[in-house]
Image (cartoon, rainbow, N blue to C red; front, top):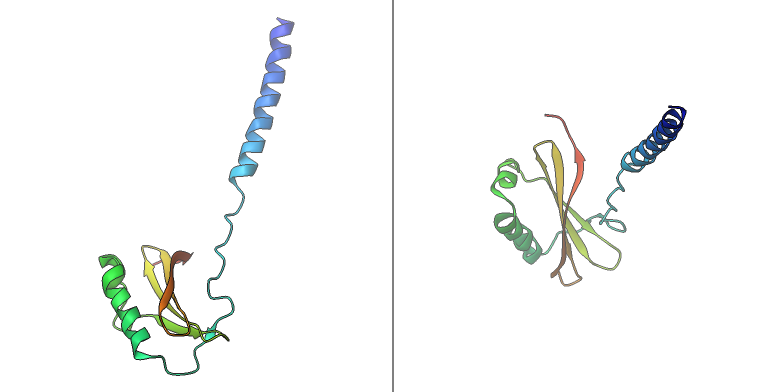
Length: 125
């Protein structure tokens, strides 16, 4: 009987230790998404019409019906540029408690070179 108690105490200790290790691993905060607009600032000049046409075309063809529905009458679009002449467009959409950002990055000739979509935060409705 003493052996059973002795082994059950060890088993309980090991089980508790495993539970602590597992809970520590699963509770760590998720790594934040790096800001794709690092190095960009608000655009100071009027954007080329080709860039405007491209981001509007992107919204028509690439946004889901739910995203289009949540754009509102004036799409939440911001324009950026960096010191090398590249441009970026940020489209921000709130959908089901999550804020989604679509980032379109353009080279110096206003040709789109990269598209990024990520969840940037949450909100309560």
